[in-house]
View 1 (cartoon, rainbow, N blue to C red):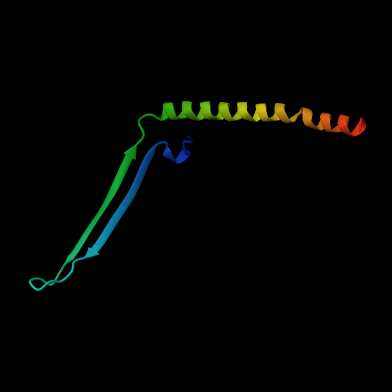
View 2: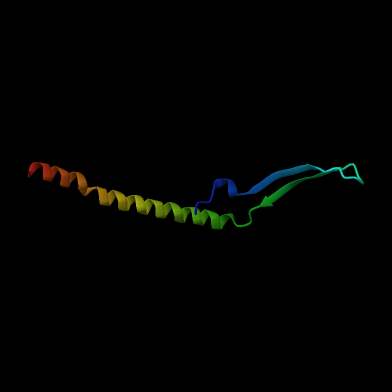
Length: 84
């Protein structure tokens, strides 16, 4: 699982919602609304850095395996062409 760089440090987000109330026989309706600000602080950034380093090493390992797997193919193709 990848951890985006935006998940480090301080997070500030806002939200809001407005809804008109429906009129009825006894009332004329009204408005319902809510608004807020949410602030979050990441308290475990070191573990995320370690996770990113682990994932980068795993990706590099896979890239090396793929390169090692594909490396003999051009040689085999050349030999097959010469010995046909």
